[in-house]
Structure formats: C-alpha cells, structure tokens
Length: 133
Image (cartoon, rainbow, N blue to C red):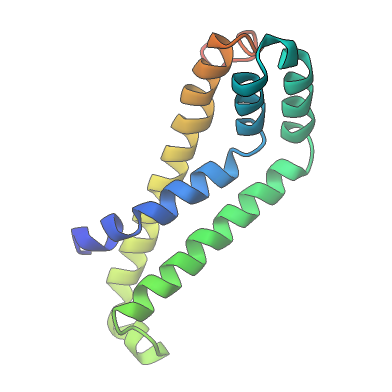
C-alpha cells in the first residue's frame, strides 16, 4: 500500500466523517450563528436527529461515499477489471481497510470530542451525556 493511496483519499475521509456527524453539526452551527437564544431548539434538533434512524442513514451515506471514493481512486490508477483487482488484491484490501479505519477514527474524534467540546463551550447541554462522564 503506497502512502499516496491513503493520502490522496483524505478529502473523501474528511467529507464522509463530517457527513456522518450531520446529526450534531447543524446544532453547533445554529447556536454559533443565532446565539444563545437558539440553544434549546438546537439541542432538540440534535437529539431528534441523533436518536432517530436519520443517524444510521448518515452512516450509510458515508459508507457509500467512501466506497465510491475507493472505486474512483483505484480506477484512476488502472485497476478497472476483476483481473486487475485480483492482481492488486493486497493493495486494494490494505488501502480500503486503512481508509475505513481512518474514517471511523476521524468521525469518532470529530463527533464525540471536537463537536462535543465546542457544543459544551457554546452552551449546549451535552456535558452530562459526554463520553468522558
């Protein structure tokens, strides 16, 4: 697996992780732009999105974004047929595992640490449910 494989997929990793966190990100943005008057409504939106099936839809969309990104990535590198895929099986598997692992780690840090800290700092009542409590 070339270092270039994973690094060229970083935009896909970042966008998919942000997409997966769209249940919480809108609330933070709402409070940042609307001020403290929007805290109750933003928290309600966040809880509604997070505890509904919408969160799993976002996970599914992120999974497809990464999958399509990997397909495009390997096709640009000349791996277009099943025979090409068999010849480059180790590279495909290693790159795919690395990309999915990095995406999950980035999502966890972004959603459950960074957004959580920003949300608490701007007044959202997320401290009681934070993972460190």
